[in-house]
Image (tube, rainbow, N blue to C red; front, side, top):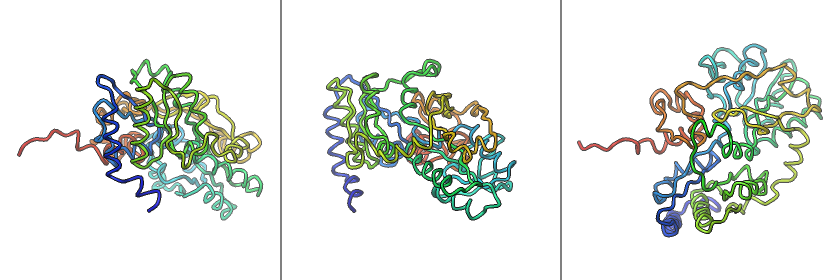
Length: 379
């Protein structure tokens, strides 16, 4: 199968692993953060960590949109469905994100709220046209990858005059979050972990291109390698990072050149800028308030902005006291360091956001790596 099997070839994987092992230098540690949850999932699923030398450590970053969705935002969506009687539409992996009062969207649906899972923003707009007597709100989450479809739907709703449709925008931006990880005050409170380079996200980079990462290479001296999601992509990206560290270089390199260009998708960027503008601040679950890290709907589209339409006011809600998602999202702790991991917090009953999506660090480790934590005892 072209473009799938070629990137899952075991012999090639062992060859790249041998190159990594041969090129790491004795006494040198290599700490690389994969920002994107898709990479976290691939690393766990394909056992990539087991093929790396002990001196190469992969750190899971906050690149899962479900994981970083704060409780207060889910509460706003639930209140729209339960208290305002709207039809609330959202993507499936948002349904189980823990909210206040032991609720989630799926539990609110069980209480009678009209909450529907959709496969696209366009499905939500179609639903609004089918139910002109009901208000329909699309609960929009995601990074730069899912933002253009939301922008397109907002533009279409305005052009077609669909007045009973609106969007609760929770779209967030990747480069701002990386900057926050590198220099936020919380790093001093939670401790920090050395980061010697980043595996750059794949899908996000298709939209924004490779140029936005130049800042991290030039300002922070952190190498970035944009990498695809297949196992050989990831391993090749790690090898490229090792070579940059060994050479003392800090550059942006593009392993995923079959899909990513330096300038990205200009048509998508233009569409997003027509419909959205920067928020001054936005709370990320586990990271706190991150300046200029999210998008809000421009005033020209105010009639389709759920926050304005329903006069919504955001209130921050703290996570469970024993939940370590904040430290895990920063790479300070690993999933197994959390007391709740695998006990009261499981994919079937998540307490923290990292356990909700299969791209979350805790869910990935639970599915593919938790038995490694157990001590082997003789019978």
